[in-house]
Image (tube, rainbow, N blue to C red; front, side, top):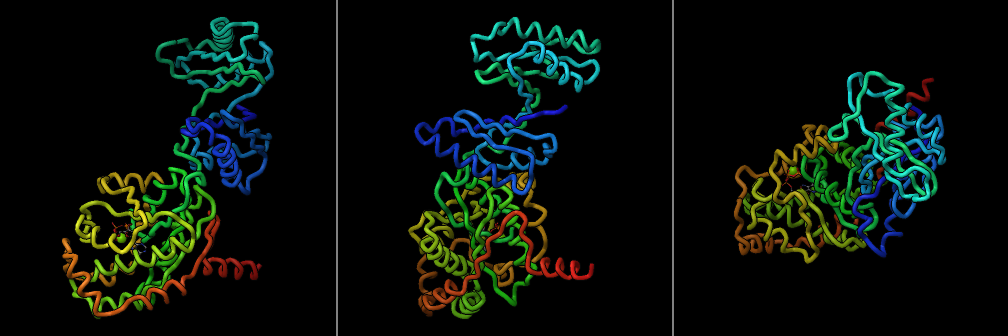
Length: 407
Ligand code: ATP
Ligand code: MG
């Protein structure tokens, strides 16, 4: 079937009253960016829906696949656009019906916005249904529970005919909801947490703490790859890599072994707070989940959160682990997250971290050393990468150019 347009339906943004124009424009930008470097399409964003005109050479499956990751899209339909000619309606509907399985049932559903069209809804349904039956002797009509539904929209500008409705990612267009800093660890949870906030239209920059040489280059590459996967949905993402070795060593020197985890998280939070201000973000996001591990009891969150007045968003707070894993699989981050490269926390994790840290003790242990200068130093030495969906690590790039030189 040769479709000539994609019909893109908006999600919740239709509810957004006066902001609607801004939402539509942002979505249009996001759609265009998601389709780079494909060709053979033209995006037209209208008030109530978007049309993507396709030329014959367009890779429609690839375009749909990319669009299905863009937030703010409720659903997508490949459509045939025709002028208001009854014979053409029949021909197009018959073409669609050729894809129906033998012995299946169908119905024709008409939406008639242009009230001046000669046939009314019921007449058009009957006429097209009749034309389809005449051409196919192995399918029947079932109005209540059909296998296929041919939809005909008689609009003011043209008639649109389609059958498939493909679910979009829902949510709001990224870029309409402010900016956050995502604490991205390389584990299963934090990438999912990031995607959850992106879905609400929020722009995300990521921060990762690493402790070379205790953590390897591979662990860093894993975080880069996770950022790249997130970038498939929203375009380029900034990843701030924080050198954390000195701070971790110092924590291990001065803090009671059972409390090092708590202090580590507090230092991460202090640094994140500084970066939030530097990048003009308004919140921190992390993958914490109530009760999962030692650092994630309420008492622990209290002690960790105490270092910042910035809102800390925890989109996974109340989910069950198996639901987070399911989401990670659906979102395509799971396989990367479970690669076994050590994270800065795993290496320095005490055998028996306190699960219910006593806040006064936390303060007491940390007071032995003034961490301010180390924190400043770590912030000053942040390495920031901009990762887009086609990003390759420096290593891959050099291998690529070596191969190129060979040929
Ligand atoms: P995750 O699967 O996201 O690693 P987790 O269940 O392993 O989560 P923790 O390791 O306790 O939980 O981390 C809690 C949160 O703290 C993470 O979700 C992440 O947001 C943040 N975090 C932990 N380690 C790092 C790190 N090295 N860099 C940046 N953020 C981190
Ligand atoms: Mg972790």
